[in-house]
Amino acid sequence: MLEEYDIDKLNPRKNPYAKELKKQITMNVSPIVIAYFKAEAEVTGIPYQTLINLYLLDCVKSKKKLDLKWQ
Image (cartoon, rainbow, N blue to C red; front, top):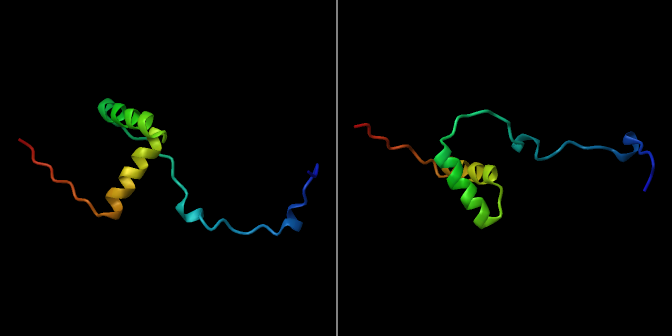
């Protein structure tokens, strides 16, 4: 392996996945929700934050709508 690399010679190109990079946010989530996804993470071997993101992506792709009824 080289000790030094000349970036200009490597001909860097744009990341084709850059528009799909995740954005870090802060949000309040119920401890029950976190516990649920952490338990699922234990079973699946997938980190719980990734599972939450996958679930939310599924909601977006299937255009799920909330059906809340307050009593």
